[in-house]
Image 1 (cartoon, rainbow, N blue to C red):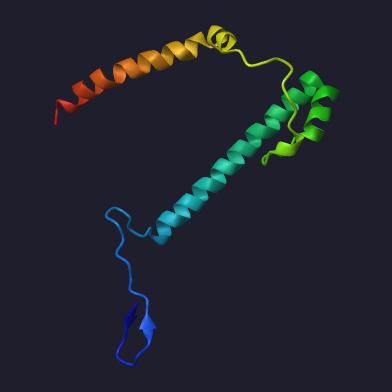
Image 2: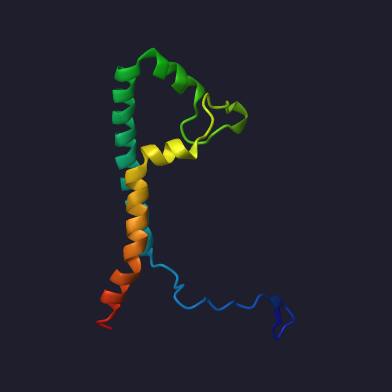
Length: 119
């Protein structure tokens, strides 16, 4: 707090960290427009998926949908899974993803070295 010449306390303005400039009105409008576009895009995907799943599973899906919230989960309604978790089963079924992760992390360093040699 800083006291001015007439004795009124004023809050001292804090300097912004480097790289944290206040966004312009144009940038904010662009972000809002982008978010609205994303929302409409995903809303269309959700509608198409729900229609597909409704046709495929019928009443089973309708009953499940009536019990399941769309966005915000309700932890008190959670039920235990029928099968216990098995890491062996996950690795057996998801070997392609595991392989890609190992390869990606193995190649990140050499690719970074090659790309940064031009600096």
